[in-house]
Amino acid sequence: MSTKEQLGQLCREAYHKGSPLSIEEIVTLADKLYQAEIAENAAKLADIKDSLYGKGLQVANWHLNGELEPLDNFFEENGW
Image (tube, rainbow, N blue to C red):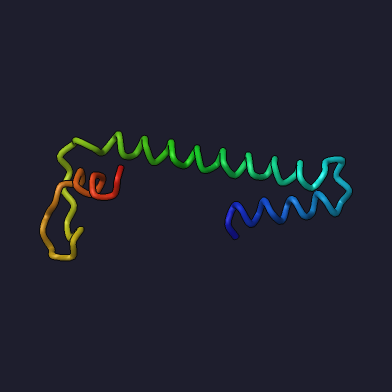
């Protein structure tokens, strides 16, 4: 189950258990949690890219032709 699905389930449970918050408030809080998770994951990916980019690393078989290619090309071709 994805994080978004889990948050949706928690929202429904909170609402049905008589939360003092309205369903709109619960959904807003869940959305903020989901956005925070996305931001955290984006920051982790940026750290990974920053630690690997420009190091001269080579990737084998990126284009399924068996040849070595700079890892930096992967980042550049994918808009990183």
